[in-house]
Image (cartoon, rainbow, N blue to C red; front, side, top):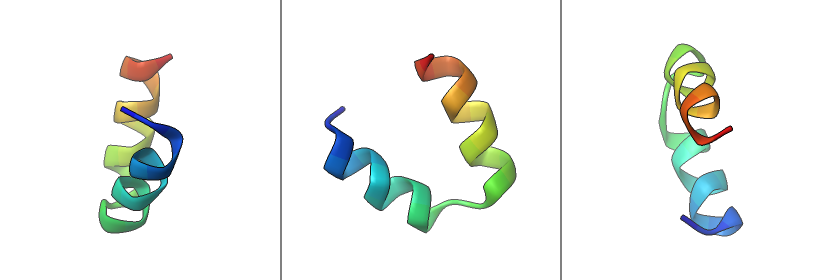
Length: 26
């Protein structure tokens, strides 16, 4: 997943899911 796509998905998902996804990607 590229940074641009990541930013788009972050803007489209709730903050809680962003935190969960961030933990997975990191």
